[in-house]
Image 1 (spheres, rainbow, N blue to C red):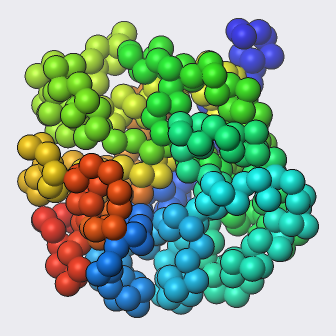
Image 2: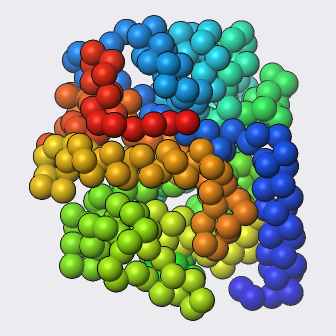
Length: 352
């Protein structure tokens, strides 16, 4: 894969990333503002208007919704919240087979085509972790993305709304050390077509990253301080001249290395979910959540890059706005909320 063409593409990619970083610094890139995911699988969630007020009171101007919720979209848009909206996995077969016209109809029927919602729409996240646990939809993923992109262009939104897809960190077959990052070979047939689409449209590669889960799954090799990204890891990861004390940085850089390995070094990495729970496990405490989420918010506010891409801010969405008591699975799944239902913070954290 290390052909002259690939090397040239990779060099061009680095130039584009550097240029993007300079423009971001000059223009106040949205990547330097933290976003928050708003899951809706709960029985006691506040009204969308209350959630909107909470976001604005805390200086949060970006939100990710996992589906085009008609109760939430108008309230958030009216308040000037930039919207990242999920396209559910179960919609992918229709969107891949119905062409741009079908995608246009989908956008219209979900209230995303016109008005204040369209004006605040920034990303469509087409499918969530399809290559991790929904392989049935994998062949439909890139065609659906292309059709939605064409439909957005027909609406005059092609330059304002980017189309991508969110991946679990397991999309990597190798992540240690970060410079050895490589994608899972079983997913490459889909990923290579997707990476070409992302490079052609300027959209980022979207990653859901949870250092908490890495720590809980392998505490011997992923110590708590390394997962929390405190900067004081007792056993940092040495990767050539780079020394990682943050699993967040290491994970993003492993994806960046994997992108470069495939010849797409100019594709940015956005973290569309990351967070730390407050209950359900000994490491899931409000104190640890404050350290991790607070650190992520702080790095976003100052436009921090990573060791591999120090001049490129990483756009991040924290999970989750509120606890979701209706989520299935382990107990931790219901305790990622940054705010309580009454609007008070679950722990001390600043977003600006």
